[in-house]
Image (cartoon, rainbow, N blue to C red; front, side, top):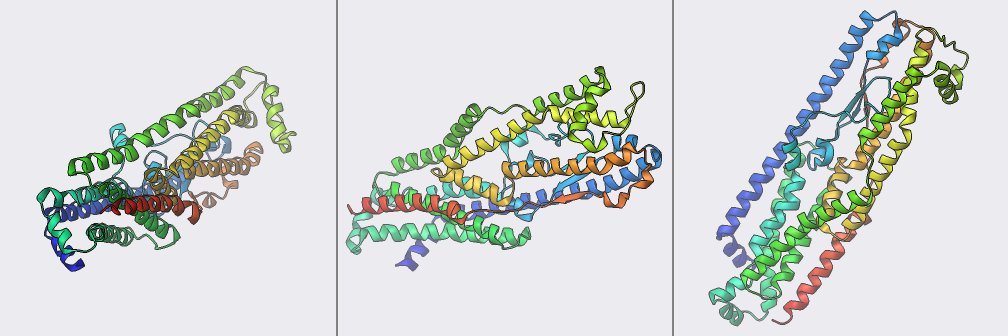
Length: 446
């Protein structure tokens, strides 16, 4: 029976079209991921060379004044890229891979990013995650919507019913042939991506792989359920396409609108303005007002002289630090609200497999917002260590020769991946099982 069903399916136009479509778009998405990784590598290499050359040139011109030298020098922290990023590029196309900062105020530098074409950002990247979430369900719908109704409308169902004792089993086998084809393409693309993108077959890869399989199983169960109502082709096609639109476009858009309006986040610009105001207003105040607050944070520098009638670096960098201090609450509030948005989205996504798959892919690939916020937190610590490492030398009027510049090459921050298998797989599995059972109960009428 299965051999006949496979032969019959392979002779259909939908098989050939689906095969060409999935393989073509799937390979293109992998190549786009490869291009993304190459771009990352070039950016990192350029940043490393720039920092080395910048230090060398600036030390040559400002070797006697360390405070002035460090006014210009930028130090780079790089979020160490992983090849698995290319499967689900997520928000990494808008969130910077690296940050080059001076030891001056951080808030004015934290949200700097590359200029990007807004139309490209709006359309997003055609990565493999996008193909799995949006294209695979459409192919499944195209192959299964007329599973029963085609036989009924062509008048062949009575002949088939007379030749088989289990009509429901026959439909299920016919469905299984199409599902196995889609799974075969999915498995091929996943391991092709692993080979072409040199992704290690580790826990994160297997997590994305299993989540993809479960996601395709969910859509297979959904198609099976709609077919089990034994309606005509038009009804099935309209119902499945409507469900696809609701699950992939409408619900995510509604959730996004809800979290944006419920947890309104102060703009990054607000923190930047507060930092600038907190710094610039110090020019009009007595130096003691700035230094008193700065000394509270850094009591080790209380014995350093701050002349009232001339410029001093301890006063200048004290002003810079106090600017960041003024924006501290707004920055913390913004981070908290973004984390709340993400937490609410994840809870809702437990009941929406399309959202759950997308958020899971981004999280497992390290391209989600939480990963970026963790990077920004690491950047804050990186900036703090830089400041504290240079302050004493600046305030003691040391020259550039007192610093071992070889220790100040670009630094890497490595993402720590962690996830719960239970939370990752159980929601989609339970929804798929429930829908499959409903479909099986419907087919009992046959």
